Image (cartoon, rainbow, N blue to C red; front, side, top):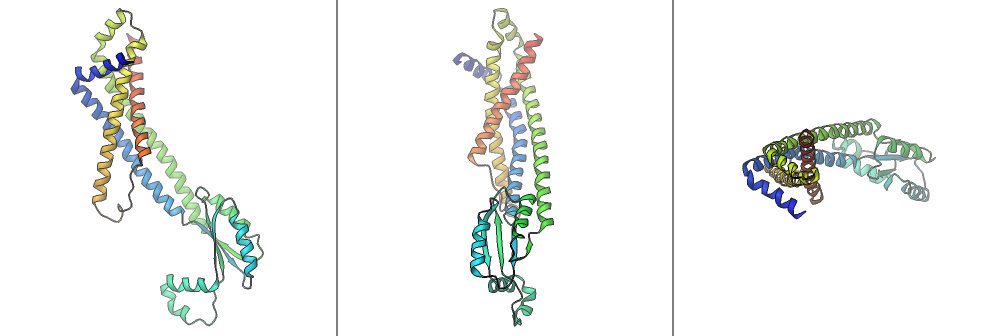
Length: 289
């Protein structure tokens, strides 16, 4: 293993310019993948913020006793989809309407009788905010005799569901496409290195070296170049992130960057792509020799 590692590192000294070009090419290929991943990460965070607003509101008949509401709230809180249940009485509903609906402030101030009903506001757990789960909770709430009406913005939730599905499909497709392009580019750069050393490989073959021994330094070299390219790509992505933040606009104020675990996965991804590109290129050359 030490011999293979030494041979792989020697290749950097034999062709420093080609090695720098290879690492740079890999870095820019992974940089494109990283930028897409950064966009996908921020879009997912934005969708998550929107999903947190998904709730089901059950409006109650007037005269429903406090004991009944308390028992029902405990029962509803036990639903597997439910994160929290909040009871809003008539007075709280009116105070909220006066605060939020400023255009109707005068109309609400002259009321002799409060027309707004009490309600239960049900928030759902993460992963349970899709249209099917919301519909299931709404249907169960309608089974309570003291519930007059259930609302949850069905069309809005269904649009959010479609947006989530479209984003997932497009993200997977584009991400795989960029990854394939990165593998091809890395394979080409390693292929150039292999062709540069084809005479050395032929001599090694003549003295009885096995394919595994010949392939080893190239695989290690590809892995090292992939790791270096991955590290450089992460650095460039962070630079782009800082540039966007420096714009100071409202659209960029909530941007987030990769977490340490995600950056580690990026480096591992670069290493595996470099290893895979080397494996394909060297294997093809050895089959043709």
